[in-house]
Image (tube, rainbow, N blue to C red):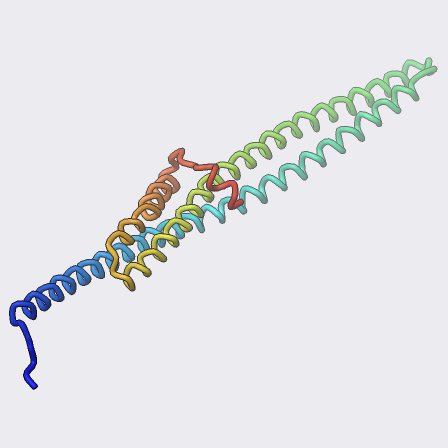
Length: 204
């Protein structure tokens, strides 16, 4: 039985298969290069993010220490003020000049110490507030890196599906989270004010 083979159709099919193979090869190469670029940039972001997290922990520790010292200064101030009030009450009814002078000296000394504790406490309060501000600024950048990591994870997942399906439109779709990840990653690296709260707040 003779096979009915059209040489023209066979050549066209081979040409179409060859074109398809070339397109798939180009797509696979594009996917591989893109994944490599995304993974490299993600690694850089992770290194910077780890350093920021360490700085956040240090700022949080400093903040707690400053507030603890501030509270201790407040307690000392209250004790000294209370002691001064007790001395003032004990001074009532005293007529001896020597006793009055001794009481006045002690009262003045405790009031001066209370003022000193108050002034030192205010310095500690400012330091604690500055540590909190530093923590908030670092957390702002940490949020940027977290969102960049999520965007890159989505992009790489789409690229994995692209490699299986050989669909160019899926490759271009993966560029949307990829480009967004680059944008917010650069913002985190260089301290730029790009912080999409509508995306970050649901994740925190």
